Structure formats: structure tokens, C-alpha cells
Image (cartoon, rainbow, N blue to C red; front, top):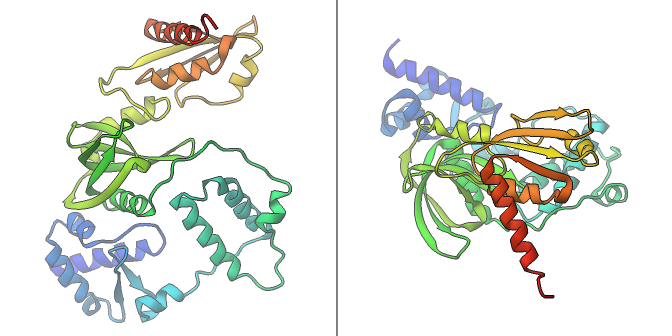
Length: 336
């Protein structure tokens, strides 16, 4: 088999796999995978039918991706075809309940896309199907949420596609103090923390893993460069040891040790607070919780939220940070 034929087989297999997944097939991703130029990939796509008669490849201009048209139909016709999925009533209930729970994120791009998908599913149901509505479900289900920071849908799409296609992005990023800087980043993950969206990325300016809030990104464009996620192994250390969204650029690691009072211990035991946590229930009814963390900022805020129900055992830096916060809080009320 010559090189062109071998590439045709690989391209065809990747296009077939993409029909059943969320994988985006781009010239850039194919060129990287097959170790050739984008011009070569373009020629291969144009001549794919010579190796697989009847196969037609179409192009989505908006997403800049290629896909395999089924049964030789065109791209527009392919998009109109229905994917047949057998759903039971309880499946519909779970989908709608999930949508309702997430409805307080209704201004987020992710919710808008999910809601549109649910509407398309509902539009294909038989007329006699008994389906709950948001209105009827809201009479028996309620949710609470924190105020969310709005995200520009165009920014969401750009970051999401950057992650999927391993494309380097240039972003304009505003700090909490309002200062705007230009950054080139390798977006590695999308992260949701208390409903707010972040991208965990390698920052080429700082040469470190950094966390960028999507709500603070005012522009995001591809630079034309690609990256390999394996080039940033430090990201795994962050993901395995973080507490909350923030990270310490010094790459220090703390072992947090806390002791909860007997009245708070049952609540601590009910949840997993960290993937590497260790929980020991003491004969006194107290609970000792320990876990690694790469920073103390969010740990301090979390510890303070328990009030007198918890005592910090270690590290000393956390003991001092909690004490300083308590002193500063008390100072707010002195003389009043």
C-alpha cells in the first residue's frame, strides 16, 4: 500500500469514528496525526472517493471541520437526518430534570446549547407522548445557585474548539484589577467551579499552568500553531492536588490537617472534599480530615466557613493565615 492509500485509510477511519463522537476533524489535526502538510491532507480529502467509492466528505464552514456524509448525501442534507435514539419516559424525565437543575446557568453558552438539543429531541417525539415541561417540573423541584459571571458565547466556542483541536490561542485577558494583557495559551481543560467557567491552560508568557476565567477573556483567536498536551505533564500534578480553582505558581505542596468538632463531623463525613483526602473518625466523635493542596488561598476561606467547628492542625502557614483573617475580621467591629 502506497503512502497516499495508507493516508486515505487512516483519514476514512478517523472520519467514521467522528460520526459517533464529539471529535472535530480538521486539516490541522489530520496533518499532525499523519505527519504531513495541510496541503497534502487537502489533496487526500479531495481524492478520498477514489479509494472509497461513494464516500463523500463535507465541510462545516462555521466549525472549520470535515465530516463524512452518510449514504452519499450532501452536508446540508446530512444535518437534517435524524439520529434514531430509543428513549423511555424515565429517560425524558432525567433529561428534563438535568436541564431544570442547570437552568440557573441559563445565560451560559453550555446551557444554551444543551437546551437547544433538548428542544430538538422534544420536537421529534410522537404527538401522544406524555412529557413533563419545565413549568410542571418546577412545582416539585427547586434549586439555589450563586450569582454567575456572564461568558461571551463566542469566547466559549473559541476556547472549546482550541481544546478539541489542540490549537494555540491568543487571548486578551482582564485581571480582577482591570488590567488587560495579551497572552498566548495552550488551552488544556474547561473547568466549572461553582457555576463559573475557567480554562486550565499553559501560559507561554509565564511558562506555567495558569487558570483563566472565561468571563474575563475579551477576545480569543487561533495563532495557527498547534500544541501537544503531553508537553505539559505538570498539569496532572495540579489536577490531582488542587483545592478549588486557584494554584500557587511556586509549585509548593501542603498537607492540610484539620480536626472537626463532634457536631460538624457528620457533615464532613457525608462528602468527598478532595480526591486524595483521608478521613479518620475519632472515639471522641471528632473527625480528622487531611488532604494535599498546592495553595492556601481557598483553603483559608473554606476553613473559615466552618466557624468554631474546625481547628487547623497543620501546616503552620495555614494556622497563621486563619488567625490573621480572624483578627482582621474582629478589627472591623472594634469600637463599634
